[in-house]
Figure 1 (cartoon, rainbow, N blue to C red):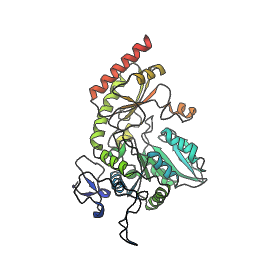
Figure 2: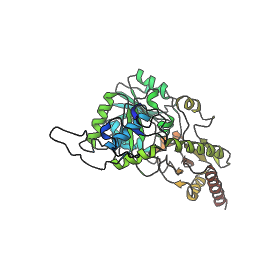
Figure 3: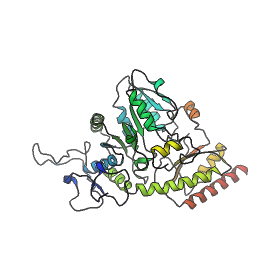
Figure 4: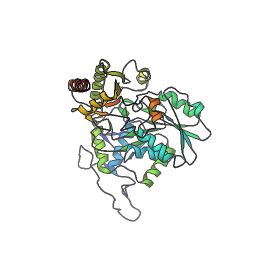
Length: 397
């Protein structure tokens, strides 16, 4: 890839030595700055009546945000990416594409914030949905006359179910539906749902794209011009665009996306194998393990398995002792950054999911979710050794 490349035409692998710049010369930095500038301004001066620089008001567009959108669109092989103030803002905007009375189908295992949005906001606005295990269930029996879309994560949060995107996209399109895929867990470095037939790709840019636990953002990436036009109108009208500074932080994070994910995935494999051998661990769910039911699908549709894994221990007490004793690993929500984070889904990320849905999905008080960072592999294993030993001692004693 050349040093000066239009990101809309670039390949999906974005490495630290690649500079992505817009092809529009009018917004390139004339001073040769290697780091793209932060245009920290709310408004832009006009040169005269009827004359514009192309930018009028940052709520509508800003050069730093536009640069980030071009980079993300290029990574996802999309025609356009729209940068929002959070991943949830991106999902909420996508839901505004639908009208009163519309119905959609969702996977039964989704991030709890998405479920809360669908239950409390989308439902209030007259939208309804049906949930099913879309890694295995046929969507055809779920379709109604007013069904408009299918919404999935793959792998899912937190149970790591894997859906065949290409197969589902083909079926959805045969039924006249659009397919929306949340690609946060793998990022565009490992998976490109648009290439597999998806119509809209969602990202929480807070996670792997930002990568440093220091900013919040979200994206909707599309190939269809009509969908893009509608989303752009929603975005400028509702005012949920990403700020210039946060756009710059995510641009900075993307520069190390490949390096970070390669190391985090290496650590994830090592931790998964370690946990499999621990007597207190009853289940390890990582799509990179050959025994995972979605392993072959992942090999077909992704270039990696990611850095997210979920495991179950033999008692709620043991799970709580793990959370109480981690030091190198942080007991914190979120994922996808340089530091390893451990989360207790039942009281954190999925606290608003109905109890019957949690039980059906296997999310109980013994389940822990791990976002693996880029620390030394041996240091992370040593941390688990210490934490498991302390937990065992406390429970026995």
